[in-house]
Length: 201
Image: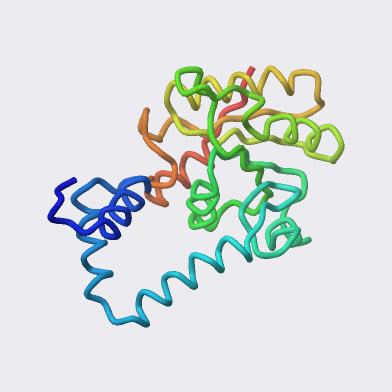
């Protein structure tokens, strides 16, 4: 980085650049915005970052991010306790919730199998999923991983791991674009994918 930029700003730009979806130009714009912003704006941002780290945790049941354990979804006795949607990330859970048609429970894997990136089954919450399915009265597991190579590999692995469990394993219908991310799919398409899910055999 140019020597014309003071070191504290350089460090801030580098830190912001590490965030997903933030390139060097956007990081620079954000850094200079914070520099010019009133003190209370920056102080509120710092406080919010500290609060989210201090006051959130993983739900010990579904592994979603929550401020209480169990999370509000797992604690809701009116939800269908026999159906479990398996998603890659918390943002996927939020996308499905926005459809308003799914009333079951969730299990968040926190990623997908990706040998290229060094992510195997042991790096995900698959072992916890299998234990949950075998220990509770789950009737259907909906695999809602992203359509694409990694999502498909993860779905196939989960299907294999659950083959001896007395549970129906389904996958979202292919109304979803291949290679896309569930969190970006519109609610109509996602609703149709949920309603048209297929049993994996």
